[in-house]
Length: 241
Image (cartoon, rainbow, N blue to C red; front, side, top):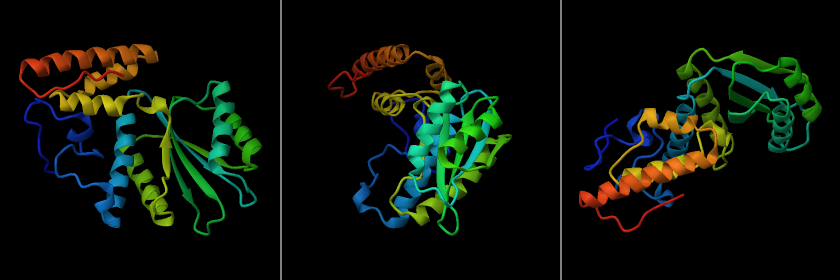
């Protein structure tokens, strides 16, 4: 895909250089209200796909967990997931996740396709807790052997979910799936003529303490701002998180 490069940065930003990019920083970006329905659909899909691929770029093993609500379930699927998540986290079994939601063909029950960054999940415990929350008696757990295969698998449900409920978001993910402030940090670095490389992205994600991550990002922004001033870029303020 052809795109305009930054005149100042030696690297394209991580949000834009990969084929999984959901955002392009250029002057030709149309505002949301001027987009056609097809363009909105494409932008939403690219954003969701990019979020997934950026998260699975982190080292570790991945599992896909499929959760289904029974037809008799009358509650909210998001509330059910939060209850299930709290129960599993108290047992130390779930932390980082990415979820795609979809309806079945008859619109009588919903499915959650959950990608987890972990090497083990207690199947019996997960099944017991999901049953306690929704009454469902069936779940499915499998190991992710192909990242691109998993991305294509989720893409199918993302497209289906958007067609079923246009305008409604059908995916969400944990803060730990990537890391907090990553989007704003990447955009600010790009404006200053620098970019977050894949190695640096992995380094920031490896800082488990939130304060350490914020301190590192602020330190990098200070350095990038000083360099931008030295080379003559129009910098008006120092951005800090």
